[in-house]
Image (cartoon, rainbow, N blue to C red; front, top):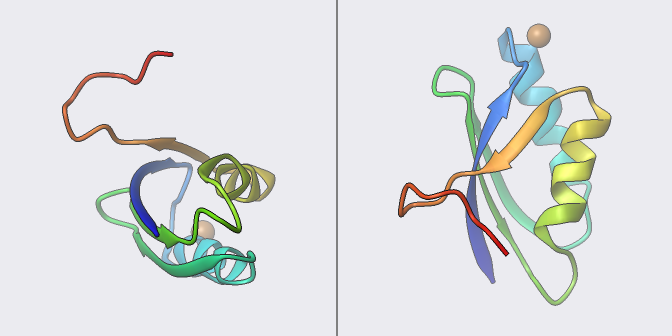
Length: 79
Ligand SMILES: [Cu+2]
């Protein structure tokens, strides 16, 4: 189980946030999605045997929003 915080761009009202929550809730392996409109953030808890962050980001992107993980160390992930 993994929890990732995402920075979400493009949300402009409460229905954007609930739309994202609804679509995420339909994703297989997604255990919990909490979207904070004001902070432009989303906290996703998912089963990483079933899904991965890329799939969840893609689901958000399909709705027309941007989602990028927030690295708690403050550095951008490089691989
Ligand atoms: Cu909206």
